[in-house]
Image (cartoon, rainbow, N blue to C red; front, side, top):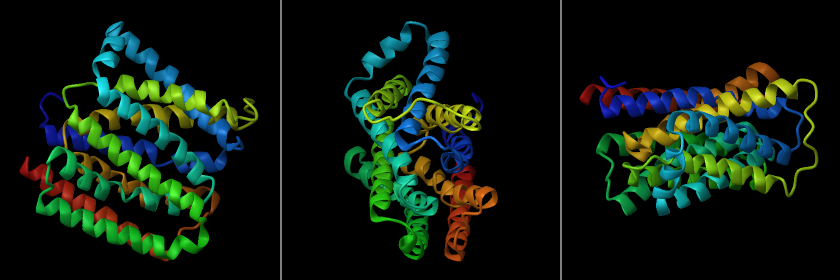
Length: 286
């Protein structure tokens, strides 16, 4: 990693994180755990997993990093906690494509927030990429709107806004490590879910699916996504999340036959090509 430029490091971290995240929606669909049970385990298991790793690596400096994160850490804890809850509840109240298309708006929101609060004006290529992917997302959403519910769609948009705020917060605190704040955010998610959870029991396939989902699709990606904006602008990190807009529904379609529409496939191809071209041009320049 030391031989890579900041652009290459950030792009690699964001890409790997999103690849781990893509089966997440499928695992949520496959599990038989109630909504708040899922939220609880998606908070508690990653909390202990990452906390143990952080304590092994940083020892008591973990708590020092948490304290010096200050207001940035507090903002990130709040936004990180909210998005973790709204994502699961959205997936379970609309179809997967709707939720992921709403999340596809995160790069546009990140660019706007970054321009307002960080004075980081995206270059022309990034604005073009954001515009194209946003139009593709709206195209997908327009077709799939009738298949979902407005409640789930709104929560999907809140998730996108939370991702944007979180990415801009990390970018504004490049000298600080906000992974400890994310760990605390996971704990808050689990504690919040405890007020609503009906059962802690995991039966049959859930004994395998839930821990795998929590480690592979939640714990590992949230560490990578928390680090990536330290190297590249927030909107570029969130551009990679657009890959999930098409790959996530494809996982669901292949395994449980929740088939994405032709419009989702067409829009997804546009999104993937746009991200690929944009990333290639940025990496070539760096």
